[in-house]
Length: 198
Image (cartoon, rainbow, N blue to C red; front, side, top):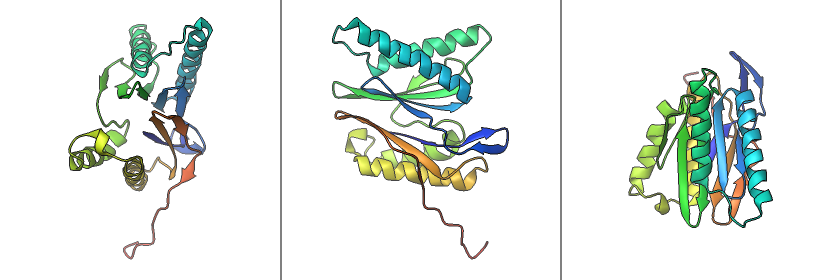
């Protein structure tokens, strides 16, 4: 499951409030991005061409999430070597043949796989919440229901909204499971500012 807010900033100006940064890639992979939105659009265009090429081959074989992730890692590393990096952090998620996948790559082409991930400011504030939640579930992602995962992601996004001046409470959640991919329409989190101390 991936989660993202929908704010597109122009410097410190909260300019665009409905920017969708979660996308489907084929029938079994999701991608989420932070960073430069125009670079993300370029990456999405490359992925659409890859999916079209896969479809035109008509060999009944779909590119797996891990293969798409490695393709993106190579693109990011190649652009970095040309001293023209794509200024994004990408998180790739997917399910294929009962195996879930979650991978992270950045503008340098650095990459890793893990059970929980966060980018940007979320790597500092949301990652500890996700790790603690996973530890409470015995360290096994298979012990987590879809509703529990959604609840903890919403909790992380609320923390980020409260703590980061350049965020918004409008989010999107994307889910990959055996039944397929689902990306929700953007919706607003319920937040509370009417505290006595304010």
